[in-house]
Image 1: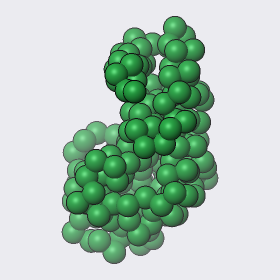
Image 2: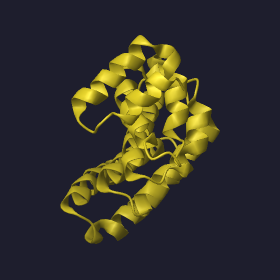
Image 3: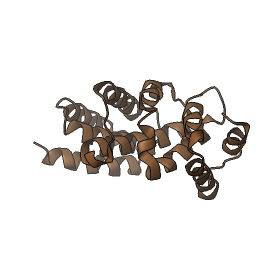
Image 4: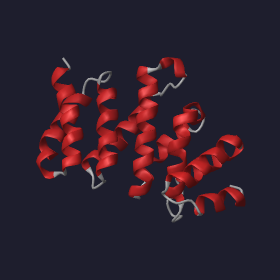
Length: 186
């Protein structure tokens, strides 16, 4: 990773403007994308979660860029332990799964192994002690995957039913949305 990129990431804040500036920098310097992805999973670095913030907004504009490092990303999902990293990466997983299943014209194609790693991470985030946003992204991602893999929906429904009463209003709203969809699914 270039020292310029490292400084940009290190100095990034959660505010939208600096994240957009860093996204614009990455879009203008595509060679910096791969080092940014690697840095996002260097969980021992206290600033690695900031790379995740930038990756999330890059994903909205250049999701195809995630094809090449997809094996690396999926293999390292379980390493994430910082809430500030899990939330944006769980959103990226949702975008990738949506593109794979709903928008084949995007060219995003997940291998069975990559899907399995995303499924495992999403269930871990859903049942683990993660914050609501990551749980909501995970349940939405699992719902989409479950439309194509039979065992996902029953497991998802069991977890949502069991955990519903023990969570916040935000969790309950997302869970209600998914439970309603599950009730309509044969």
